[in-house]
Image (cartoon, rainbow, N blue to C red; front, side):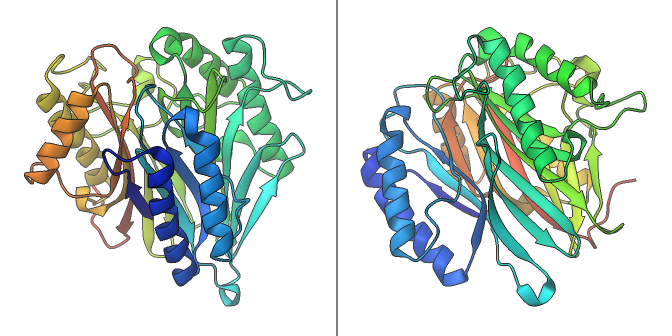
Amino acid sequence: HLTLRGAPGVSAVEDAVRMYREIARMLAAERVQVLQEKAYGPAATRDAVLDVRRTCLARAGLDPATPCTYVEGHAGRAGMQGVQIFGAVPRAERGACVSRVVGRNGVEGTELVTRRGRTLFLAAIEGREADGTLAADPRRQAERMFLRAEEALVERGMAFAQVARTWIYLQDLLGWYREFNAVRTGFLGARGITGGNGGRPFPASTGIQGHRGAEACLMDLCAIAAATPEAQVRPVLGSARQREAFAYGSSFSRAMRVAQGGWQTLFISGTASLDAAGRTLHAGDRRAQIQETLACVAALLAEQGGTLADVCSATVFGKDEATLRLFAEMAAAGSVPAFPHVPVLADVCRPDLLVEIEALAEIPDQAPVRA
């Protein structure tokens, strides 16, 4: 897990040079192959930043064609907000390898194969028609986005029921989230993924403001095909602080737990300041919402015997600059645990929510799991 934050007052391209030189050096030195990469920065400088990325990786002898999802939240920030990388050091003697995949419909990704099974990451899936053009309206784009993801999964011998995690970016989040959620719920339900009542569990997910170009919606996902009983994938539906999200109409699990190699990987969904019934807590109070959100993330970790110290990568989405500044001040003062994170300026799914946090944690198996 590798996290680099943008430097304040520096142009996006200049900062990209700094970050990707360091990223390329570290990946090459540790022989890491990238499984998933996200870069948060201005859409207007996306092409220039990705050119810098390709140059730095190629100079280090790394594959510059590995997928990278580039996202901007609120427009107007001049610099990079950060880069997150999730990678692996595959060892052939243990039957492990990483490969880049490209579907017949153009969806790109990476696949990790081990003796325990396969993990597939698909990147930057847009709602394109068969001729490659963006679908005409947002609803059709959402439908096509899910269908193209499913096509790519089937091509790799997987089904949508094996998706453990989705990251979904909506350009007009506040204006369109309810309609998008109806599309998502209908797509999943048609495949027996209903969360409760005996259906297959929903994946963990983040639904947040973001785009890279003209698209209405964009999605990354992680799907897992376990080959052995010990490589379990199961949902964490709720915690001592929050009930399952689908109890109030949102089609995602609070987290997804993946057991492998003596560790539990916990994919924690976008989490905000909500009570057990899904009502917003501390409306208008930035500090209280930050504290409540962290407490909700900590409660999910506690269900698996973990703490915030086990977080390896996180994204902190703030509705405004004041919220992100306060989070940074609280972290500097020790009020927030020092886990690796990227702060991103973006709308959260309700007008009265100011902050949302998604996280990925690694917890050793010997940690006591809450009954």
